[in-house]
Length: 447
Length: 193
View: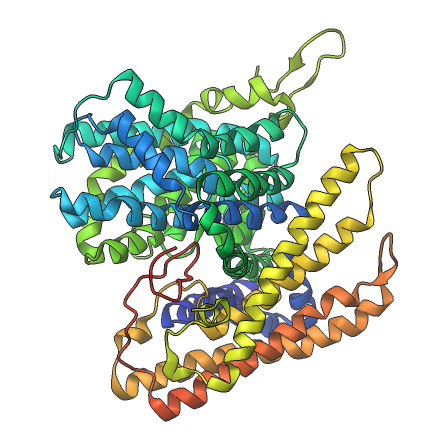
């Protein structure tokens, strides 16, 4: 049987199993085992590839970032960040919808997980928004859209996976993700200001009010400082920064702000121990799928098709890639997508002479957009369930918000110098710069 | 409610045997202990490195605990139906089509679990020929996690098939909360995490 037929069958089996209701890792492995049988590839090597997919030190960061999010959420420390967001944005036209976005910009820098964000925001702000008269479809749409910021800004788990699998600097991806992350955040605020419901506008807080809210949220707000500070100073790897942040919560935040929660910590660990295994086993299965895809030259065929249209024009290559991954992201989650298609992404990065960090940020932003598009916009699905509204209604409310994402994606494709500006300033080596052998400073590719 | 009670998910009770509840509870505890263990080993790794006398074996301990936590967690999530899902057309069905779809799903999972057991065991045996540094422990000690996970997934899937055939898959469910938490886990009281 020819490779394209096997590839088609393998992919069809995965999608058929997945949409029937087979859990994603088993659907992936089911498709791979069928593909391996037809392609005469050893099944033991498939199991080995699954193991190799998770036996990666960089992925150790994921449980720690998820533990940070879980502890912050379960210890109810997030209420202090909600209060700070309220003080900063509650008086702006749009009221709580502005607060949702500001809160997400803060909380995303602690959890790194879109799904953690959507769960926390729905619980903390979904109810109050309903009470203030916001339409439930709009609540679901704005919460889901704001939570996608977590996929871009540090400590984004999607960026960790991309960096670990693609051998790209995770710190560089973190830094470069700031621009699209903030663009989406401020874009959502502008959208809510001009096109969203007016909402209930609170009186403009005094400086003292904002300062008090900031003081009360100071301990949780140290988490992004620890994460970024540790990574940027070279003291910690992203993994170590994650564990230090978890220690900060365990030994400082919870005893200081919610000491009654200490007795619940064993339960939090048990739950976090389960939660982190879910994306990781999917990563293992996706690695096996990606291996067979590469073995059957699937990535080469697709990349040759794209380069036959786009040549070596990096903008056109990235636009076609965005188109492809918008479609793929509508059906598959970002993490397995990255792992399965990494050989293709690498081939396109080389063909277009694109900076790998730039390529990573564009891909992650595209996949973050896929989290709120049909038919499988995971965070929009979650938000609509939490808020108690039909997915189709939430989808209609989210449609105008797509403009914010599309503008951001097109901007980051055409202005790589803006995206890479922060990593070039703080971590030049992460974007391919090297020490100037004849003097101070760095020499960077493309200026 | 004690921690042990809270650790056994009451959702989809009709698909579970009471006798396997202690196993779910134990696996949840093991998962928590493994997470705590490798968190501690990473902390020790940082501390020993900072004080200038790094313990190299800590990285082996970390990766061992990490790998076991993933595969044990994957098995536990099978019993709790906490895995990632693309969607579940089956849940929208009723009557006989629902039974057929649910059985098909679980037969596929059984097939994958059987493959994990058999081919994972073959890899485990081959793993005695490679060694991890610096301890020279056979890499089979890591590979063992795969067939163990496969056996547990197989057991929990058989449990669901038997109970589903007996009690029906299409059961009135008290839990109408979304797949919450980080990737689909819900708290036992049904509230999002």
